[in-house]
Image (cartoon, rainbow, N blue to C red; front, top):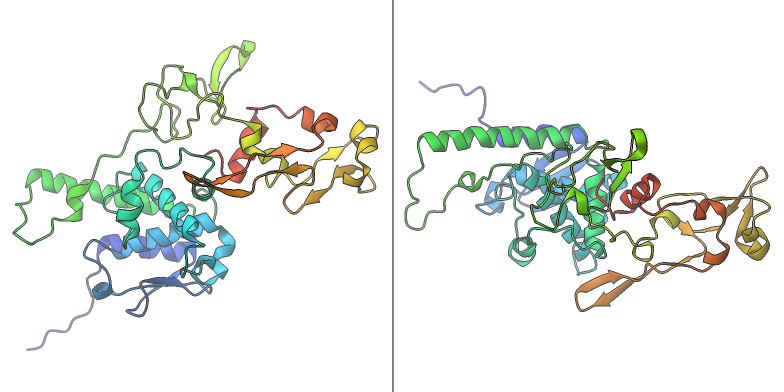
Length: 364
C-alpha cells in the first residue's frame, strides 16, 4: 500500500526566517540559478540546497540579505541586488558594511558561528574583523554598518528581524541544552562537526539596558564621550543615550566612544545630512558678510545647502590611506561669522548625539 504524504518537513530555523522575510516584504524563492539575488520587486532568490556550502543555511542567507537591506536603506528594496553591481570592487565597502553589521547583530545573540557569512568573504574579511568591527569611525564601511544598525528598530525590519534573532537564540539554547545532556560523539574522519556545536552564550545586557560592549579596562561609563551630568541638582552622572543614571565604574556598552573622540573636524554631522535647514536671524553678521549663502524664504532666512549639506561646509571626501579608505577632515569656511544657531550647537549635546547617529558615526 502506498502511503499518502500530506505535508513536508521544513527546518524550524528556515521557518523562522521565511516568516521574517515575509513580514519585511520579501518572497523567498529557491533556485540553482543564483546564490543570492533580489529582483527589486519583492523577490529574494536564494540558491537551492545543492547550490549552497555545507556550512550555509537558508536562515543565514536570509539574515545576510536583510543586513544588506539595512545598510542600503528602505529604498534599496526597489533596486535589484540592493543597488549593488557585484561585479568589480566599487561596492566592496558596502559588502564590508553588511558584514560588520552582521557580526554585531549575530554577536548580540551568541550566533556568530551559526550565522557567519558564506563565500570567500568569510576568511578574507569576517575572520579578520577582530573584536571591535565598528571602532574606526573614519572608515566608510563602518559608517554604513552603524547606519544599518540604527535602522533595526525601523519598519519594515521591525519588529520582525529582532523577533527572528530572538527566536533563533531561543532555539539555539534548546539545542545547546540537549547537547549538554547527551554530548555529540566526535565526528568521524572526514565528517564536519555540526554548526550547532559552535554556539556561544549571548552577553548579558549593560546595566543601562543597552547591548553589552567589550570588557576592557579603558572602556567604562566614566571614560565615555556620552557621559554627562544632569537631573535634580544637575550633578548626577548620566548616559546621553538613555538619560539614566550611571556608575562611572560600569564597563562601557556597545555604544561606548572614548571621551574626547567626538571631534567636529572628523564629524561635520550637524552641517550635513543630519539637519535640513539652519535658520538665520535677519540682523546677524552672517547675513551681511555672506549674502550669497543666504536663502530668503519670506517669513525666515536660512543658509543655502549644497545637496545634503550646508554650502559653507567643506571636506568629507573619500581619500586613500595606508589603512584603506578614509574621510577627509571637515571645516566651515565661514566659521568666524557662523550664525547663532551654529554657535549654540554644543559638542556632546543631545542634538550632537542625534546628528552623529543620523550619519553613521555613533551607534543609535
